[in-house]
Length: 127
Figure 1 (cartoon, one colour):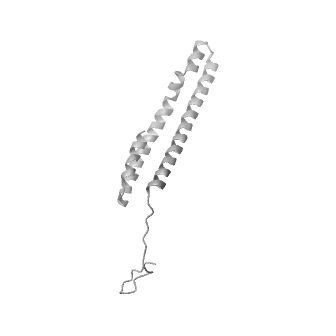
Figure 2 (cartoon, helix red, strand yellow):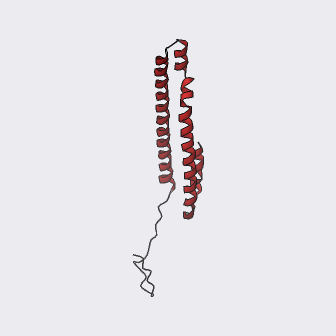
Figure 3 (cartoon, helix red, strand yellow):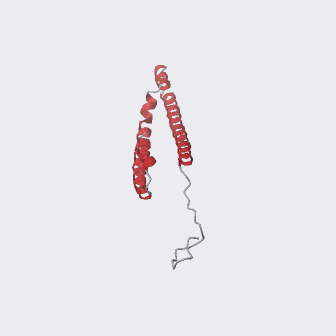
């Protein structure tokens, strides 16, 4: 969510010089994304300990190795679910951004009447 908030001002950028502003906020957003990933991975073991399958394994008096196997399975499943969610979110946002880019931008071009200025001593010919 924080990364999306840092990227939201890009909609309002119209000046070519403001891309440095956009690059700065992208860098800040990437830092927060990295910190969120680290926090999620560090809390994954605690999340798995409170999972209903793990609580059931404890109630059924699974032995140490069996509990470890269940815990590793839950951690793997949660990690895969988080990775799949991030890829899905990235795909959705890429489709939305492509739709905005293709739907809202006009092609900018300049039409010239001739191939160059031939009436004066100007060397600014526009070929």
